[in-house]
Length: 384
Length: 154
Image 1 (cartoon, rainbow over the protein chains, first blue to last red):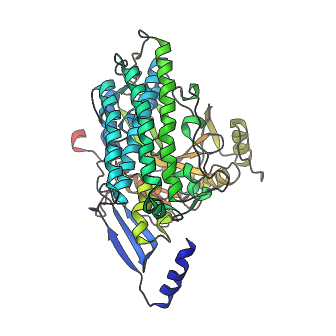
Image 2 (cartoon, each protein chain N blue to C red):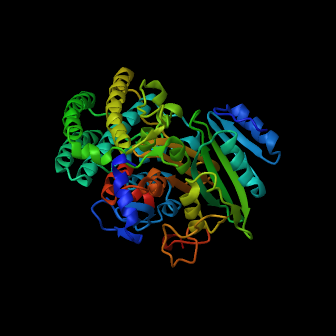
């Protein structure tokens, strides 16, 4: 807690105030979806928090047990509207692993490009949400404007903006379209320049920075033990990225550095958890450039999809992937038929939001939206 | 064995697990993956050993699979230094659906265990707060069991 708060706390102790529960949500501008946050407050400060989720529980996992493998791919898009590409990718990867097949090189690089485009547009959606949470509508508009270019790239690649339905078991649905590589390099070059406008807008605003600095510290051990994953954890000093440390689908053939803040001090505040996502977007641009180069080198007529059997051999397996929001896992138990016996989705936000108690403790009630904006809430995948 | 390995290799993990707990069976190993099976009675001890001595700081998933004649609890545990994951499977008999909770080892397992309880009915002993999380509080059945049929499955 900041030193400037000490006199406030001392004055508060002299007053005789009761602690009380304040309920935020399910319909609240800060929540970005339907969930409730119960906050126990002592004067201005939160002492306890209890998130309530489940308003959107559709039984997604049970639903998949009734469909054959290929028909689950469109459903994976509906898990999260921002990270639809990574979830379809994860599902196809898991089934390929259970089948024990290797997909063509070209498909792997196309998937990398699609994933990183998805990561950038997801982070821009988050940036827009942070802007509104902080009362800065200009950030919202500028971030959404930049996001449009990446959604247009999605349209170019697969015809849809958000529910892409693009990866397939055994590859991807279609090859990159004519001039896609030229367009994506243009978009990325433009984005890297435009991003600096937004960064100046935020970092020059003392209101924006001072609301996030020195609040809600999390240590490295806390993050690891509570299961906080993704950019939020890398902002607090955990040096771990699944793309680098547990590579899947040719990420080991791309050369990139994972941005990690506070490696030495091993403790990070809200601003660090914010800053890491900005850095990740630039990193994604780098990965896109390299992957596009590789796709060009492979050539036009290379295969991008192979035929796969419809029945998956019995056994259990799991796939693991770095989602824009953290670590997502699909655990597949199959019984030798053409339908999954059980498919479990590990959603990163489901665990991240359970950490909100540790995040909110000692934070002023006005700063809670700023703290919880760093979770990057998406209810579709939390409740499943 | 009291040595703490920060970034153990696959061989060190299998060796340490089988020498400390003879009942643990290593089912298979692959690149950065270990699949192990252990009896229910020692599951908490094995988890504690994996956390303390093998530095698996993060519990990714706790879930279950309903095999009709028994249920299987699955723990996916990950090491942040090497990227290795342990897939620990524990069989739970149908007539006694109890297993020790691991929330005291990894706080992150808390909601995963609550979810597994409400969907499969497996009771995690000593859990701090075993309440329904995703489904309504009024539910008295466990919807992810195979015995529960959806309308389209009937």
